[in-house]
Image (tube, rainbow, N blue to C red; front, side, top):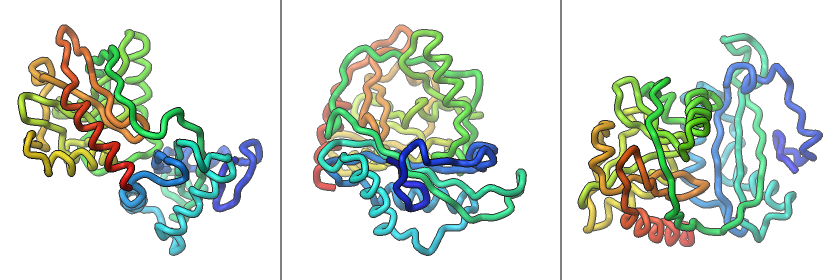
Length: 281
């Protein structure tokens, strides 16, 4: 079952026009949200990021789009799919209504919410082999558009194909200044000694929900120093650890980059603290 503009419908009946602007021009933004036993994880952060993304895309935000209203829309999808007591993954997509070419005929929006079951309620630690490489065929441009989750993910798609064709689990993306920005599916953190680095949003990094949680956790710890700073590719092989973060997986340690293998001690510590935050809401 799917929520299409506030109506719960069967997936086969959830029809979008071929002229839909999300399809035709990538004129759409979305949030990937994790649900635990009917409770939305980090909902406030998701809500404000969605509103910021819509503003950046110059979409008209309906007056009804309060946190309470959108939360109700999500919960209705969860209940319609009998996922009230199961972990679930939500995709909340907002698209501009059709009309016009590059210049929209309207700034009004529609939305669609889908749900699928997940295996585990909380984040599990994956310490298996996970090898990455740089994707250098195309770059992420620094700026506001790169910080939001939009349907324009061509670099991520092409990088994912490159990774699969070459036997890698993931790739790290570069911006036009040749700095490491993020992974194909999440933010990236680098550990060297007691210093934990992550690229700043101004470099073009996604304004990730789990990134924000870990930044807040690290700022409160005495063991580590957080630096939001540009990361050069040359730093990767000198790091003690590198890990990727996103809402679906939590924290994914990288085990190998080229000839360098990495530890995962800090990633494991942070995942434990992240799960505590998730339980507390």
